[in-house]
Length: 174
Ligand SMILES: O=CCS(=O)(=O)O
Image (cartoon, helix red, strand yellow):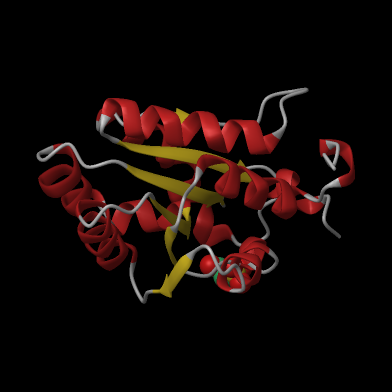
């Protein structure tokens, strides 16, 4: 039975995209907006999930998992991009290793924590500077399809790719 996208919560739709893309290795650094998604990933028998303490650690672990045949993703806050720049550049981009970064995009619309704002506003500029492709929610586009498209881009271009999902995107799961 196909569940129509409008009956899925945002986290369920992202999780559906992860499964549809065939992603089977995920590291995570928690964020309040990922509180529904991380347990879904952790409880999925088809996904090896490894919580990590810092995003650059996750970049390295995912690179190894990819070289071992896994399709990899990292669940993170966009602020973690700042912790990952060197690893993304000197490992993934140098050796053409894909990684899907599913980012809770903090510091933009609806952000209650002022400390999140600087990186929130810098994230897309940093990704542009690093020539890392990124996707954002689009009107009438199922988030699951966005995740699949992002992973396919990472796999075809052998590059890190980000999906930026701001607070209003996650808010619907209340
Ligand atoms: O990084 C901020 C902490 S929380 O809002 O994700 O709990």
